[in-house]
Length: 220
Image 1 (cartoon, helix red, strand yellow):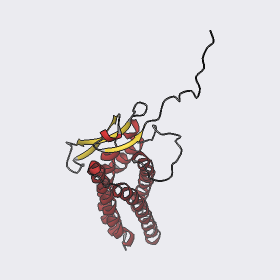
Image 2 (cartoon, helix red, strand yellow):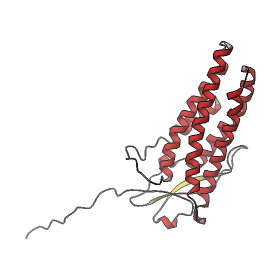
Image 3 (cartoon, helix red, strand yellow):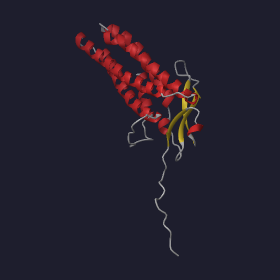
Image 4 (spheres, helix red, strand yellow):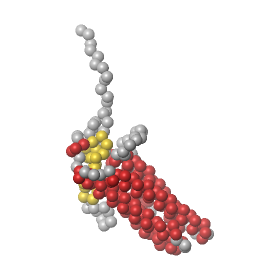
C-alpha cells in the first residue's frame, strides 16, 4: 500500500499541466518530453503492481493463480524495459562535462529499472504461491527504489513556470532524508541562457505573444 500511495502521489505531482495540449515532436527527446513518457509508464507500473498484489492475495485455484501472477509479472517486466530504454536514451546523449548531472541521474534510473527486472524474474518462474509471495517482497522494494529515483529527478517539473524565452534548468539538490531515499535530487529553476545551465537543461518557454507581422502607422 505504501508503494502504491507513493506512485500515485508521484503521478499526480507530475500531471504535465505545463505542457498540456503540446504537439509531439520528432527527433531528439528533451528532458520534459522524457518525463511525459515516463509518467505514462509509471502509471502502468502502478496498475500492474496492484494487480500482482491482488493475484497473490486471492485464494484461487493454484493453476489459475499461477497463470495470473506470472502474466502480471511479465507485464511489469515489459513496462520496466520501456522505462530502462527511455532512461538509457536520456543519459546516452550526454557527452559534455556540463551534462554530468543529467548523466548521473538518468543512469541511476536505468540501473534501478534493471534491478526491478531482475527481481521480477523469479516471480515469473515461481512454482508456488508461497514462493511468489516471498519473491514479491523484493519486487516491492525494487519498485519503491525505482519510483523514488524518478521522483528525485522529476519532482516539481510540472509546476515549473519560466518566463517567456527562458530555459528550464535542473540543478543539483541534496536530499537529507531517510535511509533508502536518493541522496541527490534535482531542483527545477529558470535561466536566461542555455549556456548558463550547469545541470539538466530542460525546454525553453515559448513567447507569450507573437509580435505583429506589420507595423500600422496612423496618418496625421
